[in-house]
Length: 404
Image 1 (cartoon, rainbow, N blue to C red):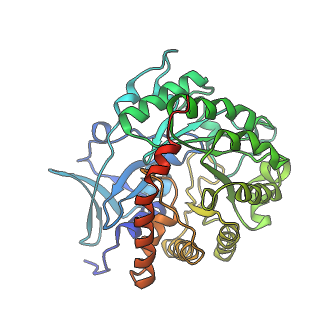
Image 2: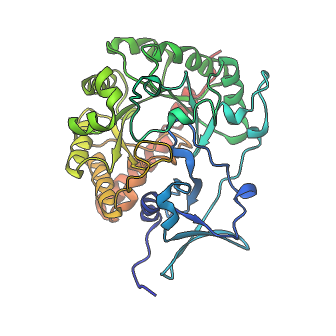
Image 3: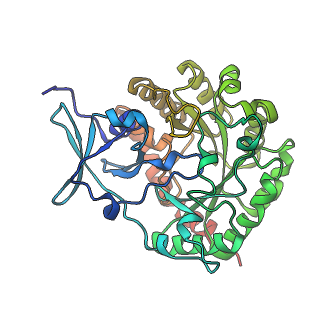
């Protein structure tokens, strides 16, 4: 047996993202786990796991169906009192939890649609895709982002179009039964109608249910078009920053490069950071497609604005242009995540204050700090977060009130 040191929960999460997971014949995931949900861009195509950790549990959607996962050294096994991930060729194993399928997945809206085709849990957050299939997929030739699978998911694994009433019913059920606090709306390219389509959904959730609401959409030509969403009280804006290097951006995001332009994303990030409280805007980076030095530049730029980065570890999704590309290496991703955590600590960008928000598709600075050594600075930052999280509970309770 190899005597390689055992990975921490956060390190295991990174390794699973990079190498995938296989299922042992003992597993009963059909009854014990959430169903595989390749929604939106497709990152939910794996199995939802919780890796218990000291101080923080790590949520992950572990790649399962992609080609590279077939050769993973990690095997999920069922044991009498739960599940473990076993690293073959080593003596290491980690207990993991499989979040169960919520009852509301089986419920139907008044219109008769399954609620699980309206919204889906990703970690503890409710993800809802708004609008028609991304227009980049419908161009001739198609100009979709090369890592994305939205075009083969919307209308197949989830409803192609959703009404406000259907979304409100689903959010209300998820709030009541799953205790969700955060609803994340996103859309593909809607040819200029992105914000207009989102407005009635955000307003209805804020008024009729009450929850924290996040939005991710193609930025408008004029950032002032965000004003209606700001007035409605959107709590978080996420920008698909994705790649720093302009050549890689044009190579892997042809539609965005031609019809939107990288500068529009940067302008939107800067505008929203001026209008929103610190650390309520994020830039989503894809790690593993461009040189690491460029990804670190992206982290520096995003945090300089007062926003926080999230790292989506490149995943060669089935059905995407890059489905046959190899995922990035473990050491490269750990270096990026540690840099992200240290940068946020150094610039006093506090992530993880809102209640019950655990994401499984990306790594946040709150996850990444568990990759750092536990020195005095780490414990000082950790203590500050714990205290502030307790102090701001009334504020978030007020933010999640039903306004009507």
